[in-house]
Image (cartoon, rainbow, N blue to C red; front, side, top):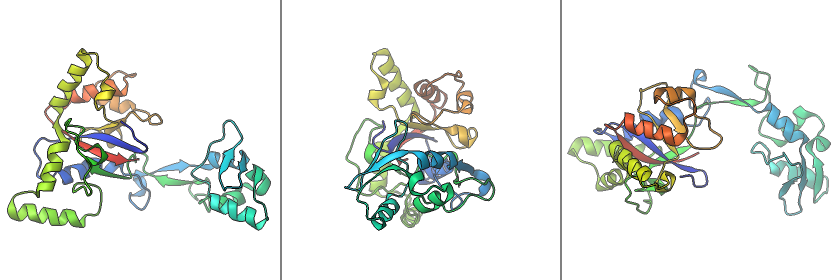
Length: 289
């Protein structure tokens, strides 16, 4: 269930929890996208952009009069590394409304091109390459319980709330909520409603999958999630998240952890996870990637 750059994750948690916010925080924390601002260096890997930038330097394109860019090479694609405003400023200084050619014609020196037209200002001293140190298992920018998939996991679909009380957002509200729970032994009704709509027993998900399969119904049309996150501590963090996003490969360790064959696809591994963790619960979490 992928919409734009949003996904639905089934995050496996204990059936009984003191704080769902705390359970989701610790289960999802290793998969936050980020770099040295969020993780120690030993948790990061170098994302090498040098070859990608070299292809961009040689790619043929046309800058149109409306400011849009058209790639003329069959294998050339727009790059998030490129800063179009800098190109527009350069052409305006040259009194050109349009341009057709390569960046290598505008700036033949590759390193100068990178500094002028991308956000990379220098090569990493450790590698001598352009790139960033990033979390190699970073899959989300932010998440919230339910969100745009509010009630999907329980088959009780509801409009997304204006403000989700359980999320990866600022923590001040969470602290106040925790104080209320501690003082009065209860949760605000909004919190209760969000949990009721977006937490399901894994056993129920497994039975629903059995019915869909036996009835010949395509499971993907009945709420198959984008990702499944295995319980905290069950196996290595890098093997706990698997999804059905085309450019992500399912790790061999995930298949091993779920007892699946080397060629098991997402749907087969999802079923294995539901069988293995049927005593647990699953929280339906909307995430942006």
